[in-house]
Every structure is written in C-alpha cells, then in structure tokens.
Amino acid sequence: MKLAFVSQTWPENATVEFAGSSVQVYYLVQEFARRGHDVLLILTHQVDPIPSHYPNLLIQTAPIVSGLRNHLGKSWQRFILDSLSKFQPDIVYQRGKLPESVACGAYCKQHNALFVWLSNSDESGKPHKFLTKRRQHPASNPIRQAGRIAEAIVADRRIEQSIRTAGMVIAQNSYQADLLRKNFGMQPIIAGSGHSIPPLAERTQGGEISVLWLANVTPVKQPLLFIELSETLSGTLLNFTMAGAMHNKELREDIQQRTALLPKFNLVGHVPFHQSNALFQSADIFTNTSSSEGLPNTLLQACIHGLPIVSLKNDPDNLIKNQGFGIVANSMPEFTDAVRYLAEDHQARIEMGRKGRKFAEEHYDIRLLVDKLTTLFQQELARRNGVDTAA
Image 1 (spheres, rainbow, N blue to C red):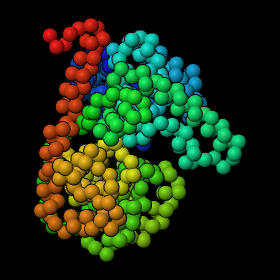
Image 2 (cartoon, helix red, strand yellow):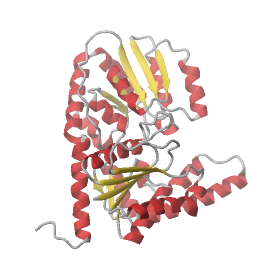
Image 3 (cartoon, rainbow, N blue to C red):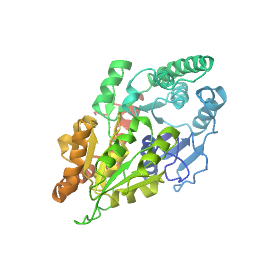
Image 4 (spheres, one colour):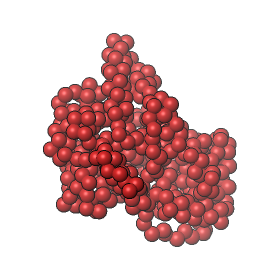
C-alpha cells in the first residue's frame, strides 16, 4: 500500500508543542514504514525539517501560515494537493476537523483514493467547531469579531463538507461514534490508539508519593483543578508535578502565582516527547482533570507504565471503571479522597497499575493497531476494486 498521512507536528522535535493526534501519527507512520509500505508524511505546523529513518518514509513540511483564512487559501491548500498528487497514495489518513481535511478530501475525490478521517476528540463529533471557538473567545473589537464569525462559518462549512466525503471514518470511542452518526450521518469504525510499549520498571514501596498531571495547559484540560488538589493536600507527604506547554498567558500566570506558595510542587512546563516517559516512570499516581477527551495518549502512557489513574468525571467508554485500572471521581472532594486513598495504599496502586499495563499490552500495542488498520484498509481498497475479500 501507498499511504499518506497529513498531520501537524513531529513530537520528537523538542522545540514544538504537540497534540495527541500528532503522537498517534508519529507511531503509525513509523510502524507502516517498518513493515515495508511506502509512506508520505506531510507536517503542516512543523518549523524544523525532520529526517526520515526509513528509505520508504518521505517527510515533508508545509509552509507555515497563520489564521483560518490562510490555511484555507488556495496557495496553502495547493501545496498539500501537489504533494499528494506527486506521491499518488492509495490512502490518505488525517485526524480532526481542520483545514487539512479540505485538501485531503479534495485529493481523494480527484484521484479516487481512500480518504480515512478520524475524530481526534469528542469535539470532532459536534458541528460548528470554529464558530463555537470564536463565540467562546470573542475579539474585543465588534467589527473584527464579526469578521472572525464569518470566517469561522465558512471554515466549518468547508471542513464538514470534506469530512462527509471520507470513505472510512474512525472514532476513538463509542461516544464519539454516536456523535458522528447523530450529527453527520456517518458510520464510524471504532479503533483505539497505539503506542510503543517498553519494558515495565519495577515500583518500590516507601518514600514520598509523586502525583503527576501532564497535558497542554489549556482551559479544556482544567489545570487549575490540579492546583486545587495540590493546595488541599499540601500538608501531606505527597509531591505534585505539573508538566505541559503553557501558552495560555492567563492560566500560566495564575498557576505560577499559586504554585509558588506550595512547598512540594514541581512546575515543569513543556516536556519534549522523548522525555515524557521519564515523568511516568518516576510518578506513583496519574491524574486527569480534562473536561472533554477522546482517548488521551497520557492515559495510555499511564497504563503502559503501570500507574493507577484518578480521573475527574472523564472515563472514555468507561474503561477506567470497567477495567479497574483507576478511580473516576464525580466531584472535587471525591477526586481528592481518591488521590489520598491511593497515596496511602501501596497494594491498591500496584494492583490498579498491573491491570492498566495488562490492558495496554492487549489493546494498545501499536503493532496490534497497525494489524487492524492494515486489514481494514486492504478490505476497503479491494472492495473499491471489485474484489470479493470473502472468497
């Protein structure tokens, strides 16, 4: 197969902020290339060039532009279309409702290629993504805000029209699949995420307990709730670590001011992707405070490293509860009590961590995910070519 992936950044590059979608593409392109497939990766928000470690993996970077108007403009869209046309992939893979969706959909329509589109969060299943953002964060100037609203309406319409043309739609969980069916009439396939799974380091009993929060510091991740947890438990033997890019000035200043008064709080800031595993290896408990998630990579990393998870209200497909690798709290008092309980019970931490690791090995090994995707892609390509795969 010839596969093209359109993503935003390369997580290994320490100078850039990266999202979960980029992490998944990072693993996928390398595994497909390792198996001998011809792979093109187009990165649309990558400043520095990325060398390829596989002769059959071509990595290109698109021109850096800003704003919806420029990303939907002819010049930027043409770059992606021309790159795809030169490579001539059978399959184009793209995650999330983005301007990139427009170029991918257009190429696949023109060349009869398979457009594989994936939801990258619960918000992907809801309509009017950019219009909602503009209304939530209005410009101070009414004229400018009116222009931003008009621009968002156009962007949403073009992007949603494009993703409706996808020949294969993949959701991270059943909730996202339900949203896509309800709001866009799609029939998604549910496929989880994949990671490289390293050997599990043994955890010893004794000493202070380390509680980890790792995500990009944005309002949807609700980092201030982790600060509140740290303040409530500041008189205990717990250490708290918060890591993640902090581009939101208001949140950054608030966090810096409040954590400066906490004696056992480590504010790390942006962590290069290749260093994030070290944070999980040195922690005892992982916490999640996000208000909306799909299947966060950090949750999978916690499972891979045998960490129990305490999540505030968020439990994709009830995995944490049903599989027993953590605690889902319905309120801040419950959230605090759950962290306190795990901090005091070494055996509970070990048992939950063991269940998480086992679940990750059985369901989230990148090799298993690529096995599944390869079968799905080959079946769909064969169907398009009139081949009976059931024979």
